[in-house]
Image 1: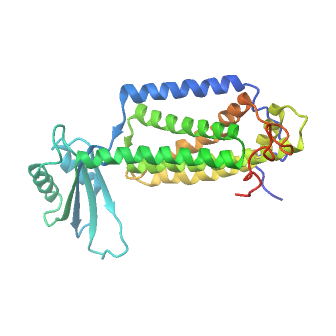
Image 2: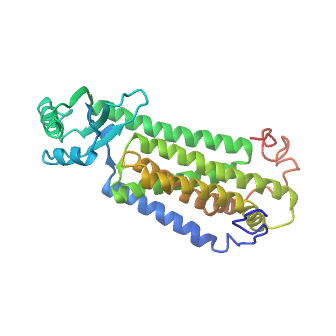
Image 3: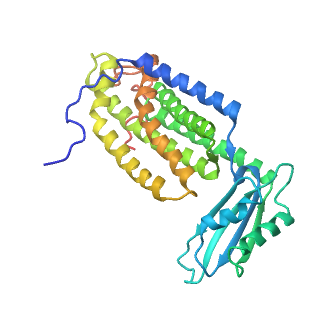
Length: 326
């Protein structure tokens, strides 16, 4: 007997409140942009510049003691993480300490680095400092530009792929859903002032990939049903497609969230921002696959009979790539 989270035949009306759900998404995006513009993002060292100090000791790293020792220095954003490496011997315990550059300074000054080292030697006198590396504001500015280009390039590539794979209406819906997911994630980071780092950009790209995967699965079933049920209303065919893929959607999202919850609880402070971004992205990405992407296609409309030439000739509706499995 197979376990089913969802009955085999469901008949939920996902578009009963289409205007309400789409309107709520638009309002949420506007509020997210407002939070971003008014509160800004809590950029980490990757974007603001700062210094990374590597420590090495023969006793286990106690992050709490390290943080207590540095608290009196009032250094602002300080991240402490233990480094694990299978090549380390039993007497090598390494930590990486990231210190944000102080206002008006290019990087952390040598005097500040010396004070940090002295404070940490108060925890363990024999502690050594194998490396000290600084990231200046120029490099940080380049990282911001590169991050924006990476996200924009991913969206553009997905738009072209969906356009070739399906129809232009589908590509507009898919990209609208992705923009929705990214804006809401950035808005939440701004509202909660969670540290925004390069790892967060990686999380945004992961969200883009996860969300588009779910959207394409439903779009693929929708395309099949548009051919199969030529006389049904577009809204009914969309509902049917969403119901037929509901079990797969919940299983995929549910198992992903279980793994992410474990990482949120046990993963530690270093990856918490990255994991939280993906966790939130999975939730809004699952929502947007139906209530944003499909709503946009429903509002724009789409050619119903894919077996006939499109207006103006040139072969079947879609493109020459529409029958490629991917």
